[in-house]
Image (tube, rainbow, N blue to C red; front, top):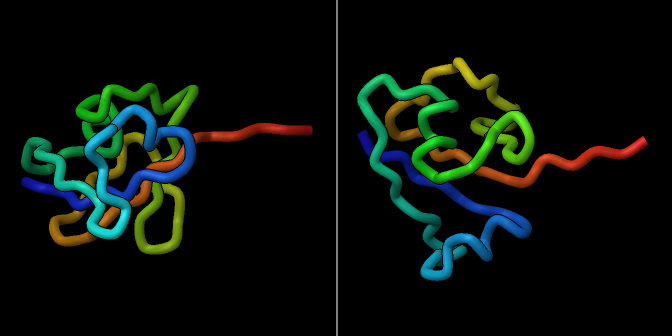
Length: 79
């Protein structure tokens, strides 16, 4: 399955050929989870990445849905 991924923030530096207007297509296994996508991108979800689809942050074990684009951004903290 292919997923359209939009990359935000400093993660763009990791993908020099990234086209912001188009996003990028990432091949993942059928029935892939968010964890699978993050691994395909070479990121660490627990410390680095937040994956958003349809206006909400996804959990690591949620399955990606064909045709639903996702956004990946760097996790931030504060306090």
